[in-house]
Length: 561
Image (cartoon, rainbow, N blue to C red; front, side, top):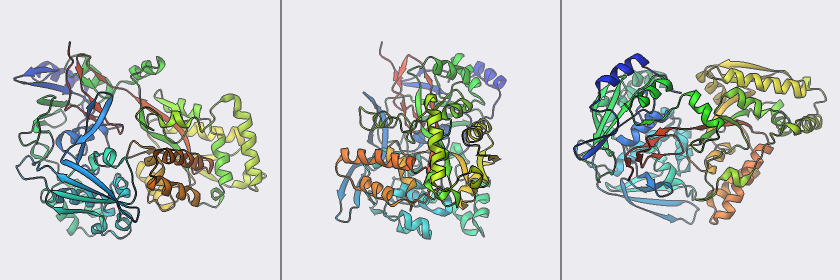
């Protein structure tokens, strides 16, 4: 959750004096819309912006190859900067995508070039930049070589000419257009506008010094002066207060939505609700906990699954945990219902690694089709405990004390401590196993995962794309994001078949098999998933929400009477 930066008194005072931009009103020929998606922006560099609020701003300022718009049955993918996209399967199993750009312009009048995408994608893949979204490009040929060597020229993304972008993928990946080519992290960037950051990186003696130099004055720090290529550009920015966008005069198409779009910032969900109640904004992206609790209790259809699963990850390279039977035993006795209750009102006991809401097809949900892979029935707990003890005995651990000391790392934020307590209590009561829970910072946990200096750790597994494959790819034996150090040739084979599958039915079957194998092997133990909700005035329609959490208001219009 973003760190909020304003107080309610200031917001209420502002609400009384900004009626010119408040609410959804007509200003000339174009509608004005005010929204609250969270706090003031913390990061507007596309490769680092992790908060949905920041990503929401970015998708209005920048346009990718493809974009998501409102369709009759939900969000649909349409052409963005690319006026056409064609693919060709190669004899070596790779797939070449060719994008013809439409001659779009940046807000300073310069043409958007294929080279702008090459620069942005190379920058994203560069291990020196340490982007949390780098693995979006793991489907691109040459990505692994870039991560190993740091040579970004090995990434097979090239500008054939100023208006032709060529991307070679290492498999079919039918979700490439919909997920990779719409993501904020893969939006085009102008190298000439980032020269300040580049200079800092070139003169720094090491990565830490480069990061410190970039943080001191990031290239996007002059928000009002940003040069962008999306449907909107900045027309006003009041730090900590609001950001106002106007439709861009250089954008290639007319948009149906608001001519003026104002983001109003709130320190807390309660402050955002006050803005909504006062009519200052017509959209609220983060609801107060009390309201969320009411929606959950009523099992409201307004609730939407979030694209992530909280889980325990096991260090499969550690001596004790190398045995899949031990990992499986520890997973079997987890009380996921208790963990979900400890996590808060929006949490639900996990039924698999892949959460509800991930589509299997236009009509089917992957989790619904795959069924429950985890047994959360309280009536079965005794049987599960007996099975776990049998697995430990089979693995040679007659006494659980023979497992030695195990430690569970978790980030000391939110309800992390309560969830940790539920876990260690389950292991103690079911097996007599004492596991020490230790609170750490996000940075400390990230370092432990990267270096392999942990036994058990609590993490959120968030997919970078709304497809089951995006949840499963990171656990391959060669995956750079495989923090569990899990290695299984059968699992790798399934992923290879999935990546090259011609038949969708066969692909889906292998996806379900891969998820089941991963959980059977105990590389990760899913705990709970979460739901979210938002509010838009009933008088409005055309809102788009991407499964990854960001919103698009470019198509919001008044609902027909």
